[in-house]
Length: 179
Image 1 (cartoon, helix red, strand yellow):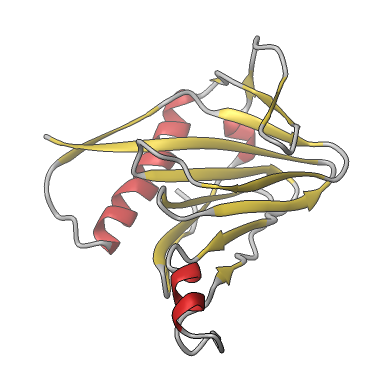
Image 2 (cartoon, helix red, strand yellow):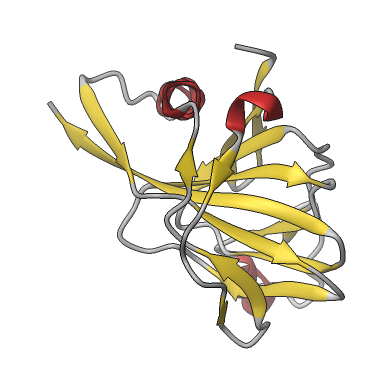
């Protein structure tokens, strides 16, 4: 594995991993669809030519993120087939979460990251403290990630993707179950 990094931002822990994109070649026989208000093109059920490498990357990040939350029990992790978002011209993803799973991950396959992670308590803090600022906790975090980086974070964290063009990201969700 390449460089694995853990970071604690004030509202969650995240993990990043440098990945070898040559080992993550994939294809999809699915038709391109449009989802959400953004209408960003999406293809589902990606099939990887080297699924073991993808699994090793997901395992590495999952184990590190579980450790960061002091979850030291035996667990199994599963993830559904990944999907691709293709940002063509000023495409974006609206504010959302991924429910029913524990962690999300994004692999920046073409182009750098434009994801924004939002503090799940941000609106509450704004309501309670009219002069809300970073002293109480940042409202948003924008990781500066390069092409070839995998980002994993908790599914409860709202996030969105700024308008972008000529980018591809691969997205997945991880579920944790005790052994």
